[in-house]
Image (tube, rainbow, N blue to C red; front, side, top):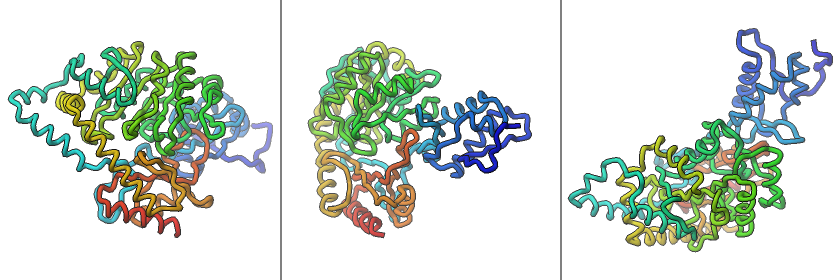
Length: 460
């Protein structure tokens, strides 16, 4: 029997020992998972100390430790040195942001969907390719290694980001999500810890959960990433690498300054740690800042999405990978997808080398600028953090407004937005904020109706 009585002792979680053949640690891990997913234990709840639980249940401390470790690997709980163990802020949230089926009743401002009208440039180019006598050859597997023109197009693509690359650093992937999966599965075999911003792209969170990788939120000092932030997670959390979206971090819209990029690059080089740089929105900026990767030649891995700015259905991403990681990531990509489709590779190559991509990019930038002018006109006074060339906005809600409840209220009123909880990493509670996409509704009229509806919902 436990030495102490817990009858009157306040405990945030009181599991029980079940009468079954299942190992105790598995039973406790299952109970903890069920209580989190059911909402009995809410995000941010501090769990009882492990010794306290062991005493309460009259079992070995190691049994509690094993149960907690299982739940931590699933992303359900997280620990902070000197603070204890907490229910993860995103434990019960959906991994990815769903795309609603087209509906006259729901205005889509959740998922980020570039305007299909601009795809006509790519489709017209494709139509001319179809007429070529040997077009049928493009319905085969793509080539490995890449041909000289594909490499030349990739290098030109990366040059728009100010990054100089060459054949030994280039890889292609069927979209940036596959690229993230390949990089993480190559460099974090068997799990490990990856540090990132406290709020980040949900697709990264989903990949990390599948691969058993624990995401660790970087501490911010005066709201910024500093060398102290990197040092803290390296020493106290034993992280093995970093992931950043330096241009328009999804969802909060921050743009990392040059000094911070340089500091991260230098730190990665000093401690020989990989930095994954997701440049998903960087080409929306007419003159992007220097990449983090440009400051760490041996450890920077840059992923640039072709889909997000050229055409969503052109599932392709260009990677700049250091020599030491090139073979292992390349082999992983090959195992996952064999090769990127020859047709997509050829379309990408021709659009870039012919200069047609520059026109596509120009039109995408003009579209976003136009949407921002409309946002400024209709939503003047609303606390929305954004930038003239960002496709997203970050709306701060009133202090007493729960972001999940606001997302649900908006949907009931015909508007799809994304709660801050979808993006959370670690134990902190989600801020009172929601993310909105400025480019998902392709009709200007529907977009304006969505902004007017947002204003009304904020007043309810």
